[in-house]
Image (tube, rainbow over all chains, first blue to last red; front, side, top):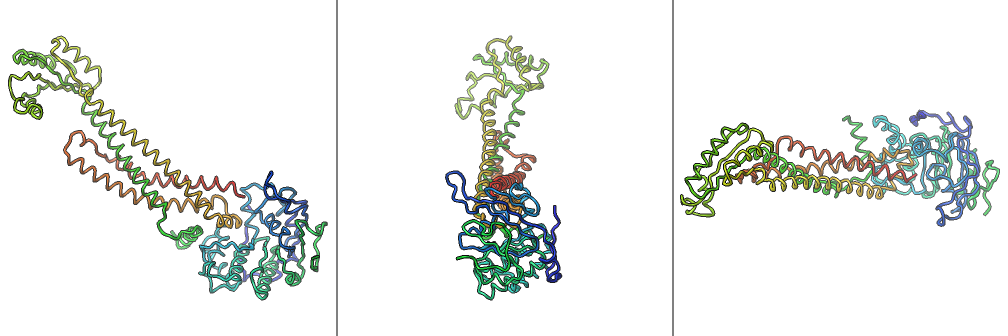
Length: 261
Length: 298
């Protein structure tokens, strides 16, 4: 089992192991197709012939109109769904045939910010953020400091005891982000993370992702907010249109360009 | 338990909404265990009474000398008594006192029962050293030579219908205990499935954070074990009180037969272990149910 790294946030300097550091392939999709339902209930293909490669430590935006398949692609990426066809290699292993027993180990290496946050409603901000560390079996005594730092990092130090229902949309978003990154995942997947916040907060959240990326995490942010795309220097863009990646070669482009309407 | 461990288990418990204090499951477990312990107590007590009856009746005979003429009756009784006392295997042979017989007849015959002309048979109580059937058959065969007026009654055969009823009650109680245990397991399975459905979103999040099925199952089994424990202690204590109360009442009746319907030390220990067995059963049922259900979720 791979040893996890649960470092404290203040101990890292930007650029310490950033995107210019290691550039091995961390994710590889080859002719991936996804269709929901089976047999006569099967719908049309949500994703068709999707091929691309993500390099470790890089920052990616995934764009496309609503219904283009962004969320479905992210689900494949964070192992919430298996593809109908094609090959997905994650951390150098074939994720399509990965046994169920090995999924938790892989999932602990991926942080996810869900579009609808999916905070546990009965838990406080503190406990929601601490959840990945508890799931990973970290001793309770070691949890306090990273959670405290994370709360400060997302600006929610004074809301540690609040339940999600009492938080604003932006605050819930930040709790979801803190929960996704506290275990220092190798890949961070965020589905429309700025969809519920004002432009200032959106920019702050992007800076959070950028900081994480500079610490070595590969970041994939799905968004249809094109104002954000140019805010991360060096970030690359993938565009989805009706389930197909627009660039058939899979080579990703920078600087990002506004997609065709 | 260290502070950190306590904080952790408490935090883990909170992942499933535990608001509401005592839940329906606690009450269900309390009621199930209350009924199961009453059934078990009934079974244990009747089994004990049946064993006691067996011990008391085995190897005991009553010899009747049915003779209308009092002189011939008393003569035959004396000869039979002498023969019995001389037989190997007979530990004790005692004639039943005429006054005792009269007292026994009093409820049916009133003062007429004391009439010396009343053709009441003479009776001899016999205890055999050997409680086996062969010894009783041997004695009966030996007494046959005294003529047709001699009748040998084995106490076991008088009381065998009572003994059969007691054994039936014991098996019925055992069946009830098994049924209640099955019903409890079924309730736990339903509760676990309902809980899984209620907390589907939370479990989805847990899975995406890297929880294993066993970690998720542990949350449920801990919660169900806690419910079962609280319910078990409540229901178990109530049942023990009821059993003790009934025991006191039975003892107060002064009945030789019902007086045997009591619980021994091992019986009380077995009853006290039932809540523990139910908690283990509930925990295992919850674990198996959750793990099997989670296999169908990616």
